[in-house]
Length: 391
Image (cartoon, rainbow, N blue to C red; front, top):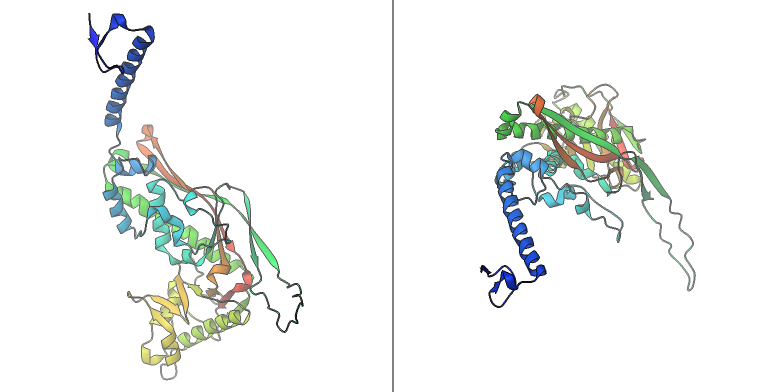
């Protein structure tokens, strides 16, 4: 008679004829499970996606089939720094004490989404000039209210013993933002060629990054430009697209006029109890400070303008400079720069977690790649913003 060993928990071998019906059924179930496990293992080995981009788009980042070496290469080329697990660490994030939002709850889970958005935020420093609010339960059309209060609470001095402080007049305001669905999508043709070419995959990432960067910067610039500013500083002479370095003894009038207006805007905001720390301008306006040599401008201007290691304008009068192509073109009466307080002027609200998708179109030999995110950008306290306007 056949004997069995190891398939049921027994201290000694047992013949089938001596087994109960329950014991026989247990052996059959165990054999079925082992068979199914072996079949699934073979199927997984056959169906592991060979292409790194499609794998990362379709699968979560904890799936072992993702080639991290390839992705790290893309990260370096796209200028991405830091961990995927702290995407929104790029922002000047702030919340009420004791009510901190778990930022990880809105971080994308797919490598594709996280890589593109990291590259977007690394591409332009203006993202650091915004407060951020996160409401992961909010989708398209949801209205989010962001409160803020007056810039100061005036203390009371000279109180007598047991004298109570009178009520302080602190005004609370709020701005309402409606979450929008933002979608970036492309249909990639010649799917087989694309699937086999990391260079083509990277081009898609770069193009998507460039488009989203432009959208974000445009929203920030629009929010600053559409705000009813707390102060307007107008140049005494028109600045043209080609900055002038001529004048009496080469005094660089464009530099002096622009610097004076920026200084006026900064001083007036500070006089209104604000603390401006940022300035947005386009590359043409920024180039004004790079045209003349050191001896052609007053020493006070020279000492208040700094550049980074690559020779790009970094700060003016202690204000961090953000250069964006979305700023208005240089023209008569146009806004040349926006001076503002980063933690009070701009607000970015993010809703549901960003996500990516990849939809193959076999009949067209193509695939649709896209990213969907839910966000809204606006000004918060308009009085904390100053406009520097061309004559």
